[in-house]
Image (cartoon, rainbow, N blue to C red):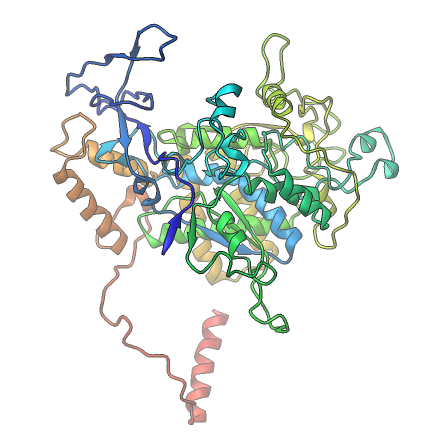
Length: 589
């Protein structure tokens, strides 16, 4: 039986509510909020609220919100998670970094959560809901207590005594890339540009890791002492700033940490980030040399779709993009602060069509003759002398919190990752404020259509790159035909020609004859919606708004599980020849 180890009773979530007339409103978390304000209802939107004793009473504008008072509202959501087994550890870490950049992009493209607790929300995705529902940080960890209050309320049983500043919920986006940095040392540089790039391969603090990363110092030192490189040590030590949520009887002192990883998995599996790096599980027999589960990376941000066809399309797409990046030696790195900004943007209504996302301009190093070669690029987020940039502010906060890990300059080597993959994470810096000033590593805001299909003559787009990869591997015609259907669906959704499930569901509710323009999803509307979604998934109801000209083959119970797998050998040589010839002809068509 499980025992709850850490629970600070933060198991609720407050999400913005949208009016039926389409006017977005923003919720203020906490308190009892009034019903939604809309064209079909009259609600008082101003409420006197009691504030702290040192402040006078004030009137604040409290706008409608959806208050979810249980963890199940978050953890009850569905999603698509895809796990990749890499060739080796280095490749799994490279895939981890690249997929992290794609998490908000594909979350927006698969958005399917516009309704919460019987109301129409002003968001399209589930991630923020779950993040709030499992956020167990203490007030001090949230940064809501001063030093005197922190000392008086220290909790010895919690890691960091419950006082260490934690900037994110345990269900959130990643805070650090884990692939190694540049392998070129300053001594091997051939010119000034190379000299600037001469950052040792295990230097974690680089231009892309621009977020505060609190770590467990003891865990970090132990990992470094035992030969784990700084980038990975920081990642693992960052996981250990959290307490375990659940322990099981008979699985505490009884676990042998020398041969089992149960205690590590207890922490690892309750750090729910947009991507998860997964080491191989231990072998049951150390002398067993047979093939075993390897180094893996899990992609966790995509939302579940109404049909198996859509789920397969996005799963295949993510797989193909990873193959593109590895085979063509490309990278998607942007600063993690911009990845977090993309996560916020991905939640907004119809972000797949109306939103813009920060994305890398050049996926490969520039060569002489390329547009932008040798040019400097001024980031729009650089300080203008009056206001701090986001990166400046984050770095100062890092320094104040002493969360930046000073990394030594010990060289490491890798036999699997290419030079470009190891070199790219350490972009050129012009000063300690971590700005990207070179064109090669620049990024800009792009629409979903531009990210998927290309922009200008410098960014080819992810879908054309996938087609190029299929050409490169000489993909067979049958497989390519199905993949083309998948890619067409994704392209049309990015272009706005097809709806996301969130937009489709929202429109269906608002167009229902019983809808009262009050953001309320009545029982009758909910029933009709569930029937429609069920029939679309089974292929019984055509849905060109979602699928275009794709027809979902109707699923039936007839013939299901009736044919058992037979292991009897074929005794007739003629029957065997006939089977082989039939499939030989099929393959050659």
